[in-house]
Length: 310
Image (cartoon, rainbow, N blue to C red; front, top):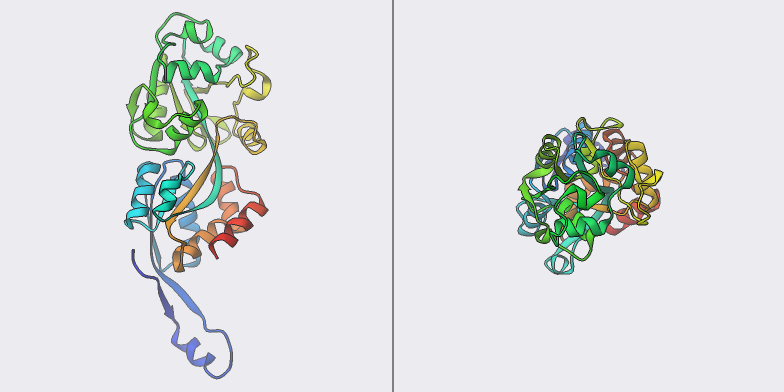
């Protein structure tokens, strides 16, 4: 990690000597981030907004999955790991310092050309059915899943270590990403495209990838989760707009909701802390809302995280 450099303006320094006036300083240096595809689009916009006020700061951001973000942060390869899952005790014992930055969710996705589309959207799918498909491999056809045609189910999962897979596995029970069966596909865009092109496919994607504007990304549908197991998709379980997704996540009703984190090795300092403070500020929250695809923290939640890093 590169050290923070504070470039002090000489004229301001001279003017301030002996007067008790504040010395003006401009931030410069570099910040590096890597990790979750889910956080990547937001981090890019935060970086752009931060650099408008601090043009001498260079910010490098790369996606590659939450596992890479955690590994890079703990190894000191990057300043901030983008991690879209809960941080475990072993990672904290190695110095992982998580900062809660946003709320998100993982959605089961299918092609709009799925032959069982009517049954799926009217009945929904229970978490147990997904367990029997992805974990136990007992459910192998759409007829078994929802009473639709007898065509086979094509399972898609992530090939990269990621928060989406971890969150999806946790939603199904006390499982981990490696427990999920299916065809491995790299990255959020990859799995979304695989499902879109395969009428028999089912996958899972982060909130920020399933909507274009307020509408669902062309060619896909979200699988209603029959959380109360009443054999039908209730109105609140059918999500077809970004606004409705936000409401269900913010309310805590959506069963596959999750938290997003920035992770540093130890408490963040200097320019890295400045950047995280910006992300949690009112201005950073406005950027998050403009980007879309994320549910912002409440003011009290942001205050708690800011207090934590100061």
